[in-house]
Length: 114
Length: 110
Image (cartoon, rainbow over all chains, first blue to last red; front, top):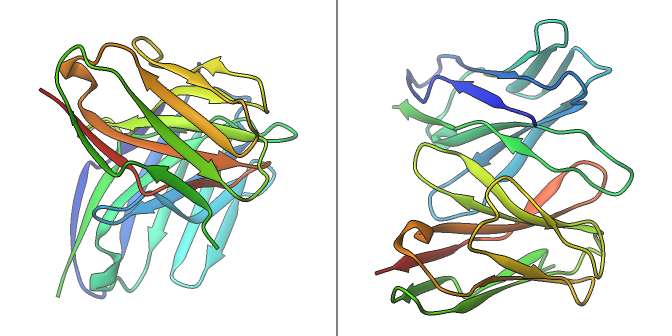
C-alpha cells in the first residue's frame, strides 16, 4: 500500500518568513495530493490540493509543488502569520469515481513566532 | 450546514467495555471513513465504506467493527476496549477528492 513520509515534524519560523514542508510517497499510481491544516481540538481541514496532471498550484500565500518523477510534493507558506500556527498533514491517494482513501504523513507542527 | 458530525465528543471506557461511535454526514457522499490519530503518527485508516451496505478494512482494523446501514451514517464499534485504543477518532466523508472531517472523538480506555 501507499506510504507517505513527511518532514520536518516540527517547524518554528519568525512571522513574515516562509515555511516549507516536504512529503514523499511510494505508490506511483497515486494521483491526488491534499494538504490539511489541523488546529487544536478540531478536525483536519483542506487548505490546498494538487492532482498529478499539475506541477504547481497557488492560492494566495499557499503553494504546493509536485514532482511525480521523484514522488515528492511540498507545501510552501509565504509571509507567515501567527494564525498559520497549526499542525499540517500531507496525504496521497488514488481518486476513484466516488471517493478516495487518503494515506497521511505524520504531520508537521508549525509555530509562527510574532 | 452541519457537514460531518460525530458523537460523542469525549468518552472514558474501562478495559473490556464496548461502545459505538456515530458519524453522520449530510453531503450525500458515497465514501465514508474512520481514522484514528495518535501523537506523531498522523491519521491512520481503520475502516471505510464505498457506499450504503458496504464496509472494508483499512490500515489498522483489528479490534474495531463498522456498519453502514444508511448512506448518511457510519458507525464504529469497539466490542472489548483495550488501552491501546486510547486515541482521537475522526470520521470523514468524500466525493472524488476532498475529504471532510468531523470534529473528532477523544476516547480514553483505562
